[in-house]
Image 1 (spheres, rainbow, N blue to C red):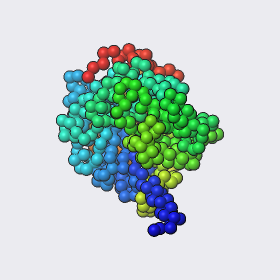
Image 2: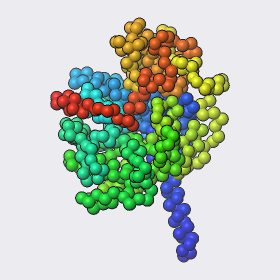
Image 3: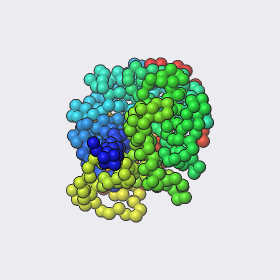
Length: 500
């Protein structure tokens, strides 16, 4: 028989090894100018980490090809832009549009080995910024996409959409008091939950204790010892805000009769840097939050109302993104540095990565970044290739406008004239390229784009890559700072004629 001390040591080592191998997902955004290539990133995640899921913010072919080649075992969640949902929801043409999107953006990559398991219909359609037209289109579009995936031979890809926690009605933070926001509960979320039950897909929420913490409840927010919050109705004491948020969602679902539907966490994380003077932000807080969350969602702990349950979860985010709009914290949610070294230890490395001489190697050395980038892209722009046809350019506009602000090329906008497809495509393709850190793959556009050192845009449309008002990624609207007024009532009125 082993001595007690040795047996205890072996048990501790086994526990540490098990913790080090926890599977988890990550959000992979590329709004930075210092990030490794998709191919290098996919190879690193596959060979060196226990990360088994990756959430992408679009259907960029460079990313899908990279994971098909280097990481076919990693599950992918692929996002559609909000702007395409109305076309997919149309009763007469929506199914054809959905089938076309699946064929154009997914089918070939899946055939090549990309392990796409989730298709995300837009992002946070139900708030904090509410467009009634998108609200009405959301569920019908999800239904069309599910049909399209089956008809195109991809029945294993499930359809969902990420929600921010504002789908819950304002409450006192006690999980047993939670319910969905009136107006959305019966007309949107109940039929959506039925869709999830029927298709086996999860309700996806973006859970961010970071956006609800203060100096007084910091320990409660980052899984540190604290007195907790007592839920008298459930007779449970909550010592983690994340647990309370998850159980609040579960309670609201259960009140509608859908407590059996799975819950997935589309985004959750904590930054390592923020504006000067902000308490509770740093490496230790980020490590404590993400490690605690991983114990809940992947380590068999579960929540007080869902003990022992695991949740499909995506940490936000894989890398810092130095070209995201302010505030400062928005740029510092990453868990890895561009050279693939961890910013802090979450036990995700299965082996140390090989040294990399450059995070984004190129055939010729790039000039060092200047302290102030030049006005329209630091000397690099994306334009359409000579000979690109109008249909392809219009497709580029439709795609990129799901991720950048296209108001400047709309009637009355600074770049509306000349009112031609070629002119509008030049603006939009470049805006998308700049917003994605001037990475070469962001100017591919299925072979119709090319990077140039000659500025194609002059006049009032000429903007800095830091001009967030014109180069805004769709996922920048996650609700970090909700607007003063939200159009809930208008959305509720628009939902009256909802159909499938």
